[in-house]
Amino acid sequence: MSFDLAARLAARRAEHLYRQRPLLDSPQGPEVIVDGRPLLAFCSNDYLGLASHPEVICALQDGAARWGVGGGASHLVIGHSTPHHELEEALAAFTGRPRALLFSTGYMANLAAVTALVGQGDTVLEDRLNHASLLDAGLLSGARFSRYLHNDAASLAARQDKATGNTLVVTDGVFSMDGDLAELPALCAEAKRKGAWLMVDDAHGFGPLGAHGGGIVEHFGLGLDDVPVLVGTLGKAFGTAGAFVAGSEALIETLIQFARPYIYTTSQPPAVACATLKSLELLRTEGWRREHLNRLIARFRAGAAELGLTLMDSPTPIQPLVIGDSARAMEFSRLLREHGFLVGAIRPPTVPAGTARLRVTLSAAHSEEQVDRLLAALGECRVLLAPEGDA
Ligand SMILES: Cc1ncc(COP(=O)(O)O)c(C=O)c1O
Image 1 (spheres, rainbow, N blue to C red):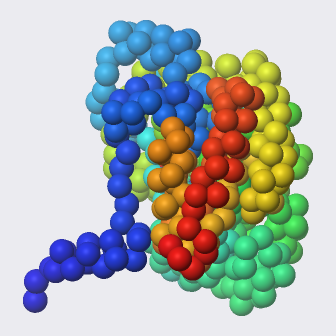
Image 2: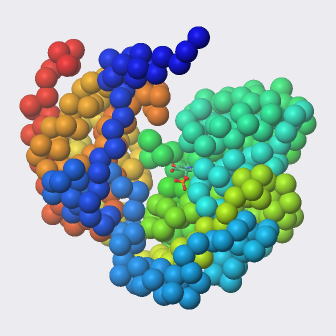
Image 3: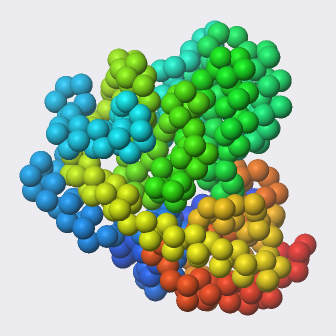
């Protein structure tokens, strides 16, 4: 037996599923240099335009000068420093929860929360379209793992009726590849019917959603009792890196005691926490970013509908255009690039088979004129695209 990696890679290429990494040679922002070419990007998750904000950069530089570059050790040894502590307190206040706990990535926060809360004999129920890190966490936990139909409280109910032990119901807040919102009030009521806990990963909701950027729980006016486990990531609208879990005192202490992805890893650099403190301040105080973003979303949706493009039911900066076939999605993305626009083609297994799409994302850093240029390019490229079936 040997590992036939070449055959595996060739098969991926033949299925039009081979992935490549565009090389960014400029700061994040609408105008980027990628693979040596200037392009207008509509694919980053920097929804509020904070990733290259001068004040956030300054906070990072000052933080590094004061606290050094590395975290140095795990949080439980000597890697937990004052900026981490201050950021946790600020995130707890921002989410209106007793405590928050900082992680180096959202992937790790999700692994940590699920595996610390459920294990053998318990049940974890997840939306079919949840992010990979949540699905991986469910499998890793050793609990009975089942996926309910997307956003379907009745499908969740059928699974809850067969659940054993403690049950954790897990959902994305904003679905990362579709941009739609979890039906939290219905999911929450269904979870409560059986005494289950609801965990929401609001990686894409914090910042754009809610009157103050407090994400989907603020949008629906839900509290700690409705969503006991709330996850946010910091690499998207916050523009920096890392993630947090917010909840009760007991939840956070449980994670500190039992969550292996928290315990056995080096803390994030404290300077990054300094930068996030600044971006949190901007997110809270500069409401115009959210308002401008919402205007761009409405403008894009109206323009795309006029072009006859198939839009998903998304009120968020994630505005996917479903193409279906992977090869056609790739070709559309390539044509757009020739016209000077970077929009990622998302293919299976990231999305279900037959639903390859262009994942357009909007940011408060975009101007209306840039959105209009994208719409014009989408119209032109669609005409150039081979008719369905010929690709
Ligand atoms: C819904 C969701 N959760 C978690 C993550 C992982 O977060 P991070 O990039 O910080 O690991 C992502 C994307 O990266 C995501 O889209």
